[in-house]
Every structure is written in C-alpha cells, then in structure tokens.
View (cartoon, rainbow, N blue to C red):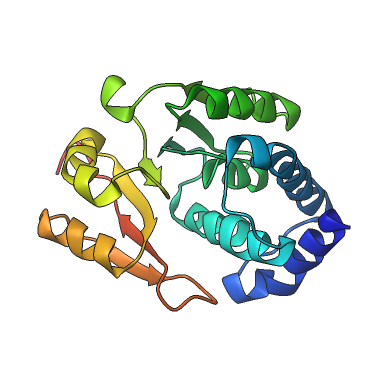
Length: 208
C-alpha cells in the first residue's frame, strides 16, 4: 500500500517540478523508497513521514538538481545519509555518476547494499568517512542536502569543493551563509515549498 501511495504521489506531483518519469523509473524509485522504509526505524535515515511527503520532499526535490548536471557528468554527494539526493538522481539519469560520502558506518552499509540492489554499482561509489578526510573532488558538482553543523562547516566545505560547482539544499539562512563567503549563487525556490531552496553555483573552468 505504501508503495502504491508513493508511486501515485510521484505521478500526481511530477508536473509541478517539470519532471516526467517512465513506469520503470517510478517502479525503481518506489523500490528505493521501500528499502529506506525497511531500515528507517533502525538507522533513522529520514524523519518519519507519509509516502506522499516522502515522494515530494525527498524524491522530487532531489531530482530537480539533475537539470544542472551535464550529460555524462558526475557529482559528489556529501553527508548523503539515506542516499539523498544522490540515489534518486542516479535512478533517473543513467548517464551520470556519483560518489556518496557518509561517515556513519551503519548508514554507509545500508547505502552499499542499496546501491547494489538498485543496480547502480557501476555508477556509484561510497566513501565511509568525513568529506574533510577525502581528497578534494574532481567532479562537476558537489551536492549536499543535510550535513551535521551545515552552516558551521560551510566555509570548510566550500573550500574543499575547489573548482567544482555546488548544488546545496536548504533554507534562506544557508543561502545567506554561502553569499557571505563571496560565492556567487543562483537560488531556486523548490516547487510546493515556501522556504526550501536549491542553491546553485556553476563549476569554475581551469581557464577562468
């Protein structure tokens, strides 16, 4: 029943996000939702919510960022937790690849199993450590949707991204924090939301 309600919510709300999915993509997104639900009580992957809210807030909002990733592009997802926004994006964009960074070992184990179960192993790899403990990324974008102490760690995270673009999700406070560092960003108010934004900064080419 939850999968049906989830799938129905994806179909009902996708047009508000300017998105369209094939039946196969919806089925795979529903399978991901099911995998998260199975482990959520044990691992606290996301705050409990009805399937309709999960579909909108966790899936459709995440997939919005794919419009900024070039064909054949790559990204690094910092503090990915349940695999958000990375896994939904990888499901609907078979041309892109990602590195998922998650330092909590039990969540990392869930992600490893989920990546394999969904057939994403050839395009997704996992780093089970803090972003600051990994080499600076060589990628098109760095994404981040939820990170412990996000605002406090923002200057360190932005420095770590180097010339990569950023795709950060958050409220107005996060946008102001990014701007205070001198980073130029575009702000996109997420559909069906009053305070949740996607903040975008394009990659810096080596010639700039």
